[in-house]
Image (cartoon, rainbow, N blue to C red; front, side):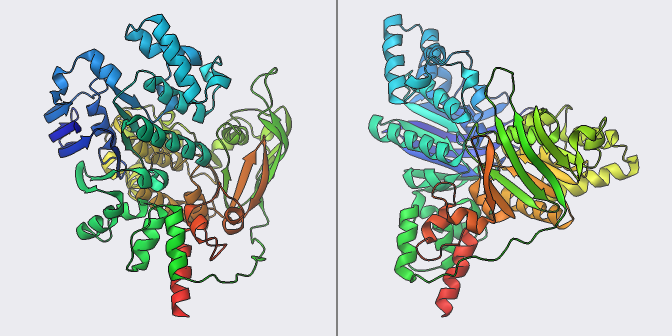
Length: 557
């Protein structure tokens, strides 16, 4: 039975001419799991917010949205608040109270539910989501994964019929993201909950979805069963940017062009490869990592805690990053990765150990000398980078601070904007942009200072696969020009394809670092889907491109 009906929906933001979404027609059945995907800025978030009238943005709207056959405008506020749940992209943006138990009860209290019913529902939901161990904790003490799980539980306690989620895993590490998606699948299968999720990380959500919807330029260009999306997309454009965002199994299948059923999961992908290719004996990778002998950054036995009575976040952290290298740090939420970047950049001060940058201790850099064409940090929250009313003004402000001649400023902005694909965003307000667009513009502002050392904290957060491809090309180009890059990320695919070395951060220190092929081939969870599929055939194939290359060479034999 149809629960949500969208008919000829068009929406335009104030002071803009081009609609954010245009002529959207979509039908969602009760109990259906629908994934909405597309490039950053394609209109996914706008569409989702319009489905929840309390979150609907200001602007000009035409068309109809019907929930249970009732026009959205005529829907009672209480029905909309309780029956249409919404989980935001940023966990911190949704949490409104200071204690976990109060956060769970907050929605029910606002709906006027009796106290005894609230207590029963909160207890049931805390048990279901495994929140008992941190039920009485402060919300600001939770990890990113716990916060997102709390947001989900806080919505579910109101017993919604539809659950809408906007890129809920973008800030989660691979293990937490998998657990979160598994929870959504459980809610969908066991409770018959209708789930609508916008997501860039399709590896886990695509196989469990009943329907996939692909958006481009504010329109729906393809919709249908996930297994059919690749073929339908090919009929429109065989080189559509969305192809590089599909699950690894689908990408490998499309690239090889073998007549067979399209695999979706790692298990299906492995069966597909084993069916068409035979295992090969691979030599161990004994090649030594070649690098510049100059050390750009070194941490020596660094210890750091935020307050005297709190536990240490960095516990004797030691590692070296060589000049002109892309060094990628992975690890769980709350492991200390961001703290390490903040200590390297001088934002936080270690109480023991040494931080050496370009052969000089960080304490010896006086004034702003560390940040003058030497080191720059992209923070985890791109919004914190912007202070002006348009992206262009922000970039001009940065160039003025750096005392770049006026005659050179516009050309510098245009060149950087073209590289990052943000030319059309320059005259927009930074806070009117999508998460992925904000991320690209924040990177542009950081690059204005032309640093020799670049620190990136979750640079792919909110980016679609095509934007990641452009970012990868940009970072490799900066590396070729001699820049040293340290990147913290949860995106194992991006790390495997971009970095020279990958390292695992755990228990306050770097455990190990190695080239991507060796690093990922020895891991079970912190590895790529492509490697999980190909491991029985080619142990050191880490990326989809490497798997396809191995398959083609095997065919030639």
